[in-house]
Length: 101
Image (tube, rainbow, N blue to C red):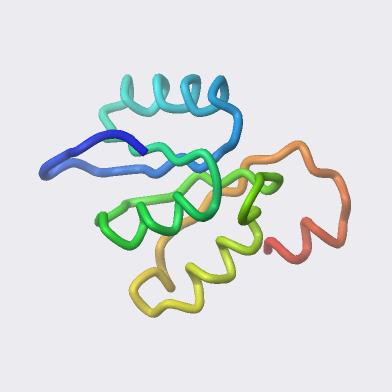
């Protein structure tokens, strides 16, 4: 995890690919967003629970806690129930796509 921002719209990027996190982070920062990063769902949940976020960009396939498991835990918490989450994946399995929706 990285970043500490005051009075900014913050986006959490959760992806086990450092390259993807760097690319998405650079684009968001250029657009004026504060960015936090986590390499898996466990760290992502921890980060979400201690920060006020505007949005989460979440990979599906990750170690320790995958994106769908993290999403289910987030949405079961009233604090995060309405937080927008963008799933970022190359997954093409229809059952997994339906589960994420």
